[in-house]
Image 1 (tube, rainbow, N blue to C red):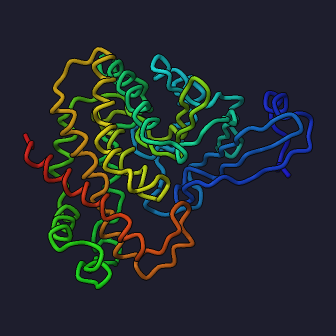
Image 2: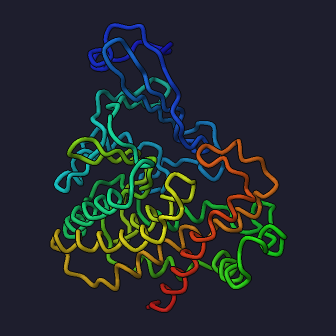
Image 3: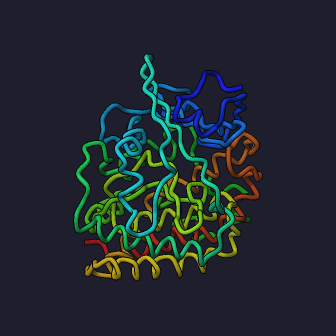
Length: 358
């Protein structure tokens, strides 16, 4: 049962009760998220997201009261309550769940009551649907590049801050053993060498990313945050949104489409080829006239930097049981093989971006 009566606006959607709650899968490491559930009543349903500055989670996902911080805990509340999430990409047919009610509690916690969007979730999408999103995003981000939003709570230098919070190789007590038999069997020696180099030094890629043309990015674009609903595409989870490189969302979407097994990994070559092209067409349609080469370099630099920690982290997890993870519960050894194509792409991106270093 729901722990407390919902606000009147929510009760109007759900009906008079009784109410039941179903917890929804989410990143439980993030201390900003106290819980996400679907609340059902006799007349309808809504999604309740509870936000807190000091919830349970890990140090890596600590929150901040700094409004520019990568994990500012109030950002998503502000994105919804000000109408920002619903409108910033609306001209391109991209939006957010409708806000039903927003609550500020005496203990400082916040609650968002959101539309329970019905439609095809991102993990059910194919390449055509992902490419359509990339095209729409190009249109929207062309406009944002020309007229950058100036809300004081939008994140800045998100990627650099995020990577600073990720434990670096050896920094969390685990040193990746690139010679482990599982790694040798799954990844060719040249790839292991490139991934080890990338993990040890990605600073030049951040410099390239920050020198790229900037726009307003979602910064958590992946299938779990996408729903195709009638004539609109709905983006969930606006907690990281802020300034980023043109193409930064595209590299994230390419990798995270297959990283956790949400979409068939055999589609990665097509996804990696189609999405940047669709995004570039969208940028042009939105009136952006910058360098296509700069966009491709930004995709490569942001993607390689963002996932520079992934391979060593996978090696450190080889002895773990995968059942504790929220999304991909395959064994760590199996994941080494399944992510070969993805990690090859990341290494290729690092190489190509490095050749274009300013």
